[in-house]
Length: 265
Image 1 (cartoon, one colour):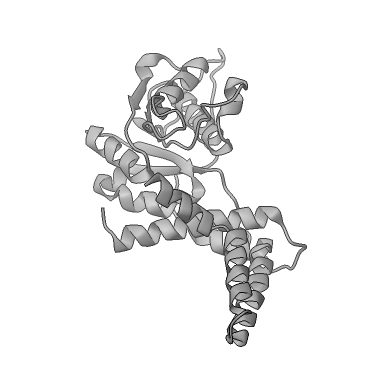
Image 2: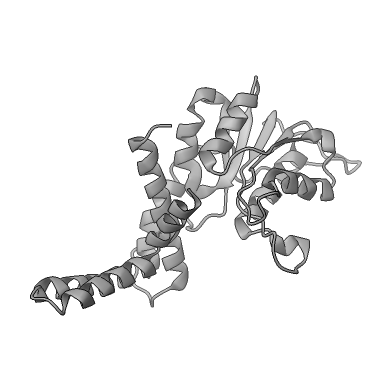
């Protein structure tokens, strides 16, 4: 499965797909299919130019990142006159923070081992926990999908939250899952009652809403790690590397959604 996922990730890259088209066009140039060869080479440049535009990337990301209800992206952390945090009236019972990545290799500081999406998810979960005045429980998921297979992501996430001052008894580690589906399945198996706020990357909202359907109205989503700002203003800019990266995130998520619809789990 790791090999298949690596292939899918590679093919969702606009650069990889453009290179593939160029290679096919170059091979066909040595045959009689000259018109087909030109088509593939021309398509490679058009595709790369299109995906390097910020507006096109925003168009691809908008349906994924900006069309679902959330728990409120600007939840405040209120304090009383003594400086103590007061519980937010919309506090959840559980906060599920999904796994992203933790680098187990190399010589680096602990915070550098966490990927950007991991840090954003963890910090937002901690912020929500603080806003609940410690009333919510943080659920961390993620199994042994890291480079060192004996290391489980959920346990590293627990260490992260403990280092921020979250009591061990307020943390629930479910070291299950090598993908989003398995992580959600672990939480549904654990769940009994109460409201759950799910913290993950904004591109995951559609897929998570499908996977979490068994919990009905008790689920809210707190998205982080946005790759677009939600403004669809037509524009033409210089080619952007960030636009290429954003397109890859969008294409990967659309592929995951197609797989979910075509192969129900």
